Each structure stands twice: as structure tokens, then as C-alpha cells.
Image 1 (cartoon, one colour):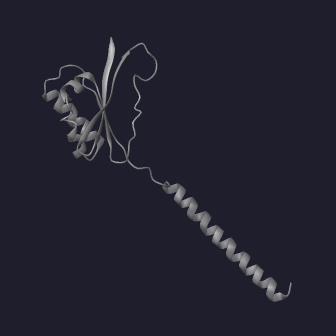
Image 2 (cartoon, one colour; image 1 turned 60 degrees about the horizontal axis):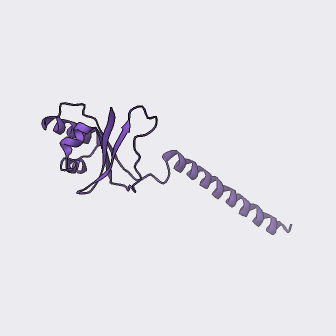
Image 3 (cartoon, helix red, strand yellow; image 1 turned 120 degrees about the vertical axis):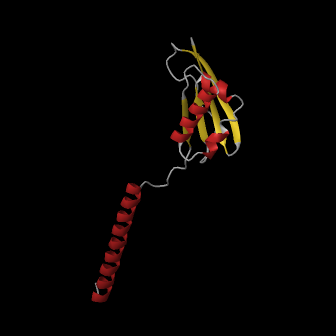
Length: 137
């Protein structure tokens, strides 16, 4: 018995097949890995053989680009696969690639506190230097 899953990248209106894996089920480890560049806005779809056959040339995958959430896209692809007559196991995973935030909220808060402390320390240092000069040493 083999695993025959497919992976697609949806970028705008374009659908690119990324991989088709065939590996014995006794193999430990990933059946395939995606060595393709992804950018914010891309959608990645992994699907079982039944879904891959129903999707075919990727026309249904263009629907993924119109969805706002991965859960909605996966549910709709499964429903469309079933509507096309799939009777085998239908599995679909959809991931939306988003840009990583530069800083998390916690990191930004910590940076703000440290910055405020640094400004305060510099202000105190300037004050002390001015007092020293005015006092004549």
C-alpha cells in the first residue's frame, strides 16, 4: 500500500503543482517536503488521492484563492470533491502563508519599556553632568 498525496501552491489566479509523493507506509518520516519559495498571500493545499483526482488540473483550487480562511477553503474543497463523486477517503489541508510580524506584542511592549528606561537614564546622566559642571567639579 502506498501514499499518493499531492501538494499545490495557489498564488493569485495561478495554481502550481508542487509535489506528488509516493512512499511505502512503513517508511518513517515525511513522504515529501516542499522545497519551494513561499511568500505572504500564497496558499498551500495538501490533499489525498481522491481529492487530487477530483481536483484534477487545479480548477477547483482557484476557489482557495477566493476564501478568507483556510478552514472554509478546506471544507469547500472536500464538499466539491464529494460532489464530483469521490467515494474514497477525502483529506484536504489548506494553509495560508502570512507575513511574520516584525515583533510580537510582548516584544514590542518590552522594547518600549526598555526604550523609556534608556531615555530616562540618559536624561538623568545629562542632569548629573550639568550639575557637576555648574558646581565646579
